[in-house]
Image 1: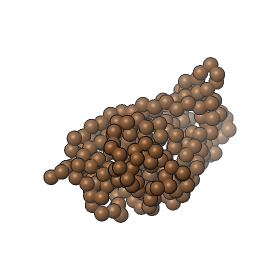
Image 2: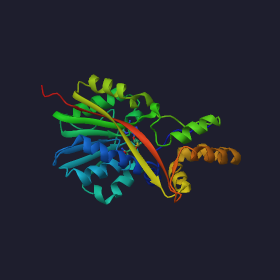
Image 3: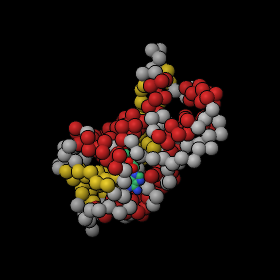
Image 4: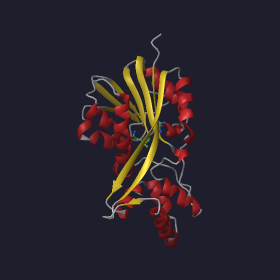
Length: 263
Ligand SMILES: C[S@@+](CC[C@H](N)C(=O)[O-])C[C@H]1O[C@@H](n2cnc3c(N)ncnc32)[C@H](O)[C@@H]1O
C-alpha cells in the first residue's frame, strides 16, 4: 500500500496532469459567473496559474492576485505570458495576507478539498472581498465519481492499491459547499455542476498525462509489472474510444457562488 502524499512540487507536471482539466471547467465556470470587466480578482490556491490565466484572458481584470503555498507551482504561474500582469504570493488560504474588503471577487479553483479547515478558507475569502462582491469555487465531485482520474483510483483500489486523498474530500459535495458558504454569511447562493470531456490522441497520451504527477507515479512505480498492465487494461475499459484511436473521459465538478452582504 503506497503511503505517499499529494505534493504540488512540479508546475509543468501539474500542467500536463491537471491544468487542461482545470481550464475546461474554468471556462464554463466563468461563463456562469458572468463577471463584469475591470474587477479586482483573488485566485486562492492559484497553483501553476491555470485558472489565473483564464481570468487574465477572458475577464479584462483591473488586477489579479494569486496565492498558493507551493513555490514550484508559483514559479510556473509567473512564467505564463498571459499572467504577466498578475501578482503571485506564497501563502495559505486560511490566513490571507490581504486587507479586508479589497477584492471584487475571490475564487478557489479545485482547491477547497486541499484546505485543512475549509470553513476558515471560505471565511477568509469572505473577509477580503468587498460588500456586494463575489466568493466562488469549483471542486471535482470527489465523492460522487467526478474526479478526472476516478477510473485509475477505482481500479487501483480493486488491485489493493490506493492513491493519497486530499485532506477535506467532503468539501467537494454540493451540500457541504452550501453549508460552508452559508456559514461565512454569504448571500444569494447558487450552485451547479459542470461536466467536461477531455480528449487525448490515444491511450498512451491519456496515460502519460494522467500519471504525470509525482504522487501518482510513486504509487504506480511501487506496483509489480503484471499488476500495472492489468491496471491499464481495466482503466482503458472506462474510456470512450473513437474510430481513429483517440480516447476521452468525462469529469464533473461542483460549483458555488455567493455574495458578501452589503449591510
Ligand atoms: C488542484 S491544485 C489547483 C490549482 C489551480 N487553482 C488550478 O485550477 O489548476 C490545488 C492547489 O491548492 C494548493 N493548496 C493546498 N493547500 C492550500 C492552502 N491551505 N491554501 C492555499 N492553497 C493550497 C496547492 O498547492 C495546489 O496548487
